[in-house]
Length: 434
Image (cartoon, rainbow, N blue to C red; front, side, top):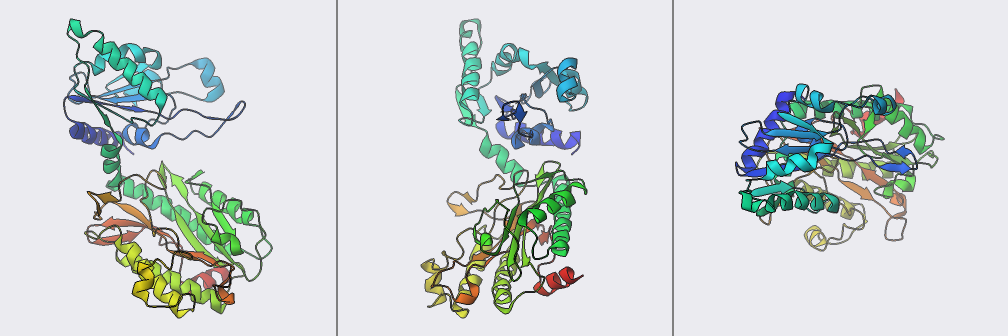
């Protein structure tokens, strides 16, 4: 992303909150994994979205209409000794020169400078309730202003959760964001293709997990968007299975739900395929049903459609198909009304996708499912998970199938960002045979 892109985002936020307001966003903090070992640092998505600053322990302040500049950053100063151990820092000077901050201060100046920025503002926007420590800090700054009321200082009297404003802004991706997400999906699609080519009976789930991470890394995406799900056989029926330790058996299916993160943006792809490269007739029947449901759902992903329309389309196809396969019995309409499909399809058909794999943005507005608009990105991922019980015909027991793509809503329809990995069963078999 360019400096101009981040500046555009801050200006959009400033316009939303208005000239008598101020917004405070904290950066993520480093977290201890065990003793002296930290978890890999990942910037808070809201903070990164507005600043492009990827260091911990910082505060961004947006002050609309301020004559000295609207973007103020507090960050760690340069420190040669610490940089020898932990890597280089941008520092105060770099924040101005490289990030385009109008003013920047070391963190040690936070308690002195921030009350002067708050003074005279009517409304204060920040992530209220997300961190009790931050709540206490903000009230401390506000109380400093209140203490100077007789000297003419004026503290804000309205406090607003910033999340909904900022998350609505993040929900609609710019052209620059769409380009990054397109690249992320392409890298992940190529990695999934690699796994189809490598998969053999006798391998372990972690073999495919490692190959996927390597395939993404060598293509420029060193981090995954979430822990990979590699479930062979009945493990595919566990929705968030991440143990990834079992042996892949001849005759089983394997479900892989995995995607890379590129420049802070997630991809999220699921494919299910036969370990030995050939679908059995029962596997093919169940797979064809899930694919038909996904294609029906994707067809509904267009501007002006309601968020729930893809899910409703998938549920209808799956329910009708389960009746045809002898899993359910009854009239399709009543089965849907009674949610008789739920033992076999218990999750929604998708979620927002962006900087977070389950990205921000409300699914309903004023009590109604929201209308899809150009720039929104969602996943479409119906599935079937057949328990090993007498309620299921023996041929389908223990099968878990999910097919997931990343879909960008466009002006005239949609674009499937993850189309580079096959999902037609014949195409999957041909790729695995090659």
